[in-house]
Image (cartoon, rainbow over all chains, first blue to last red; front, top):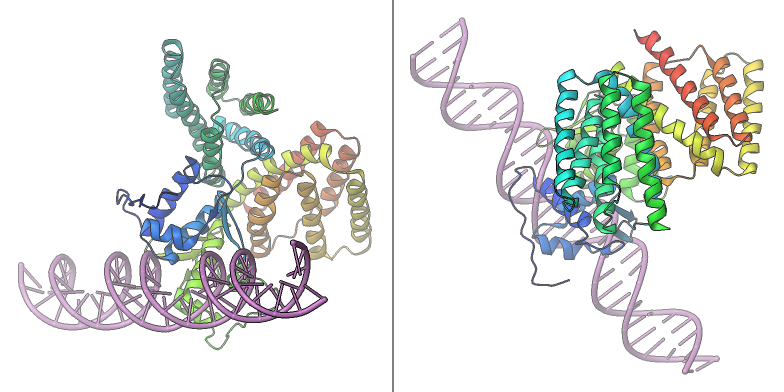
Length: 226
Length: 226
DNA sequence: GACCCAAAAGGTGTTGACACTTTGCTGGCG
DNA sequence: CGCCAGCAAAGTGTCAACACCTTTTGGGTC
């Protein structure tokens, strides 16, 4: 809104201009800097970031693929609207996908990877004991944990889908709904159960635990939003 | 390859130029007209279709979102490579996603929709009895059936994912691997089981049956490709 | 004052041209 | 003969300008 706030693209990551634009916009949307449902004016945004409309349109196309913006022909693009219903839908997706990821991970993860996951969990446990307030860090830790399971499935389709698309949508919901789950302790315990299932190389159990875990989160949400 | 084969875009669907290009290329890739792993030269393709490179790049970006092409910075885009391993991965995704779709559909489908599905199945049954050879039509029917389940879930995320992205990849595999399943009869029976679960409004059973159905297809594939 | 039509302003879709990167070839050197 | 430097050709990334669509605004009429 502030006209003087020309956002300079950090030339940090050395990809193409479109890549940097994509990351910048993605972050801006996830962090809520670009409000939900707000219309995107290509000329204005291009001017703000000091790039041409062509590059901007390419970046927007990628955002559309992530479901972060919606575009209608001849009408322009808008930042996606976050309804409670859609959030529920996403958690239903997660239940199915991450459940399958856990099942596959129980077979495909190396013992070293599982051990590393155990170390991470131990660290989380200490953080929960010590500082009850570090909610943000716990959130990050939760995402880390789920990430490792997904990657552990070794299924590239699954990894791309969850880590490159759904992940950002989920982060957007977390940031903007400002949800600090009251159940970090329970979540931690469920993570431990899952670790046990992985150690036992039990795909059936791993999927069951993960699905129950995601379902619990969803139920918690449904209650908080109702 | 044939230089004289200038492909004229049918102005059939009235969307934007990029939309039509996207559909045309999508079809060309799925049908195998553009071979797997082949490099895409932007100037040549643009000239062939009589459009500018800008529009073509926009269409390619969408194809990339469907996982039909892979692009590397400064190196260009290639049609995706179809390995047996990736096909397995896709069926693992389908097992999770369509299983969840069936679960949700058992709760969300209207009775009218379920009845319509029953009519469709009856039709399929007759086709199988009468003409053993109409494989293509059966394939189309199979896709129709699965489509209706997915749409019946009423989960927009799920619908978009399966019907707009994965569907085309799957069709590409089917066309190019030229797979005529020897198990259309068994598949039909499994479809009937699923219909019963839907009629009984039993989510648990619906998911179980659908997952088993997809898993059977996968096992059948693994055997055929080994 | 309300409604409708028309013109203009703003915005998106599309294009051709320019700059930089990668690739393949050519020629000289060890 | 093989290898590396350097150049040329092709291709991708980016840009500014043009064409069409949508929306709004202004004027005229009922």
